[in-house]
View (tube, rainbow, N blue to C red):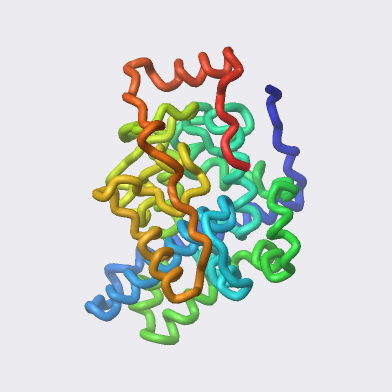
Length: 304
């Protein structure tokens, strides 16, 4: 087991990272205009729809499709999912999937780009994105997608979907929609999945004795369209369904299931056998279990 270190960022990459950080901060700053614009139910509906679409781009697209192959789809809808994820300011689909696969391979160990156990809450939530150290990951672990030129373009020009979202909202309903449908909705869609990286490994319950600190959190599941059932996900990363119990609401899976019924997606992966895998949560702190597993050489690597 060796420690992987990120390459030292070059001056050019640091400048690009500063520009990216400026756009993220700029969109956040636009939210301060909310008290200055009118708000109607129509504007709120635009904001809610924008949030749901962008977040779905992350949860169904970036996460369950690009990172884990939880279902199959056409090249056209693959691009649509990539575009929606890009709009949420979460970088391109290749960057996201590559980083997430490294997270599963080294979960809560050296090499994990956003472990709160190793770097703390703020590193897991924002620091790993803004530091510049992860700007140019090795895309060798996403070769099956990097062969598509349109996905490489999305990674290179990752801010175009974000800016297009702002332009469409402004042209449709003016400044109110620009603030609520673009700035506020995009800011929320940016932070919601990042809370899974941070709080999803810190707060909640554990159904499975995985070798990481992943947790199931009902509040996160509600806010991030089912992504909060994070311990379930770490038990079976390739499953399109994260809410294993009937009461574990998973809006992303419901949407994927619905799309499968009309032929937009297919080969939707179901959770593997659960009855024999459920374990009673030990009172031993999860950090100790991880360290003991590493010492015995039994730490689960996870899905690449």
